[in-house]
Structures are given as C-alpha cells and as structure tokens.
Length: 291
Image (cartoon, rainbow, N blue to C red; front, side):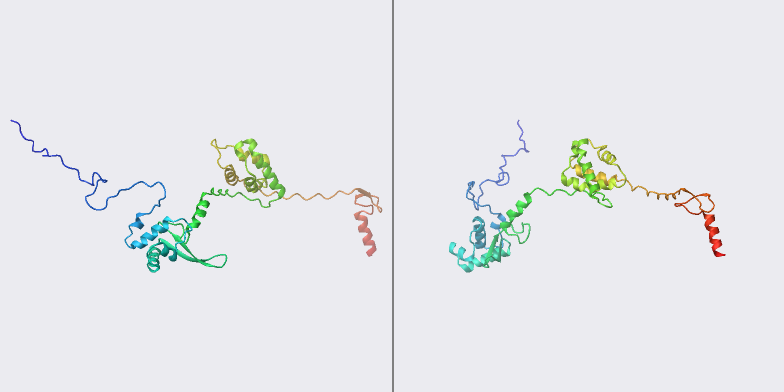
C-alpha cells in the first residue's frame, strides 16, 4: 500500500506580491502609468516634491521655477499673473522656499544705479561651492576648473655669492649644451634661466665647465625624464661641491737690486739707484760736520 508523504506541501506556495515582484500591481493606492520623457521635461528631486514641511503651493512654485529658462521673471507680481493664487499666498510660499534653501533672493545695484532683486533657484540646497555663489557664476567656475593645471614650481637651486652676468651666461651655455649629451635634457628658456644660478654656484667653486657638464649628465636614469629641469635642479643642489679652501697669501715681492755705483769719496763700488757716496763715506762726512 502506498504511504502518504507528510513532509510534502499540500499545494504550491504562492509568491508574496511586491516582494518577489516589486513592480506588481498593488491592491490599493496610486498606480503609475508612466511614459519615458525624451524632450521638454525637467528633473525634479524627490527631496523637494515629497518635502514634509513645505506647502503644496511652495512645492508647485519651486517645480515651476526650476522648469523655466534662466532669466525668466519669477517675482511675486509675475507669478500672481501666472497662477490663480494671489500675491499674498505666493509671497508666503516663496518665503517657505527661502527658509528651506530652495530659493535665494538678494537685492543688487546695477551699473546704471537701479536696484534689482536677483533670484537664485537651488534644486539641491546646500550643494554649492560657496554659500553666496549665484547660478550664473557657476559656468565661470566650471570654465576655470577646465583650465589646465598650473605647472609645478621647480625645486630651488643653489645661488652664487655674486651673480656676475658673465658667470650666468657661461651657466646658460652649459645648460643649453646638455641636450647634445642626452636629448632628454632639452630645456626651455625658462627652465635654463631658473637653473643658471645653480650652475654659477658650481663655477664659482672652481669647478670647470667640463666638470659641471659631466656631473649633470653622468649616471642618468634609464627611464624617461618626465621633468628634466626638476631632475637637474635636484642634482645641482644635492651634489653641490664644497667651497674651495682659502688661497694662501702671496709672498712679498723681493726688494729691487740696484746697480753698482762708484763711491765719489773712496771709489769703492756699492749698490745704489743713483751715483753718490757709499754708506761709510756718508757716515764719515756726517761726523766731520758735527765736530
């Protein structure tokens, strides 16, 4: 005799609507019959449409203001002519939008001296670069952000004690010739002007130009040099030779040797710049004059 399987379900379990099929038709509430917009539409955030503290009029006005073209008048008088609500209710709704950050109204003076009210509509309150930045300035900010980044500043280089023009010109010539040693060391005029004082600091340390070229071009890395000027600036600073020791003072010049002269008194030869008497005869003559 066949036995009954008590563990088997008596009938297939039904699926829970809305759990396994989130788009199933609900039993109550609104049913959406939507068509995809491809033109003439505005994207409005649910944080505005479903805002719990805004009135329906305020939400409606915010949606309308966000849908119009930039430059459209949205003052109280214009909105009162557009909608059946009167100016008092519209003014109160606009104040609601200002309180919750969906609207900013400021009074500004035009170049001609007139006072106008500038209205800025915000689709996401608090999501802006600066608290007082109007929407018409954002394209300018985006254009500035699209500009290429400013070039990084080169590292500092040693400075000579005295930047003599001839010394700096020799340094420029050395830097300009580095590309003959390695094409990767091609420098712009601005880079060479920045590096020239560092090379001059080497030259004033009694380093010959040939030795400077060798120090800057030996043992270069095998990989490409992304910023050759920055590489040379680092090498000029890191490998700067010490100052040479002070030179000893020059020995004093020897006293000049005078030619021989014949003494007018004793006719003995003696050295003197001009003819006359020797030292002994001058001394004897002095003693005789005293006695």
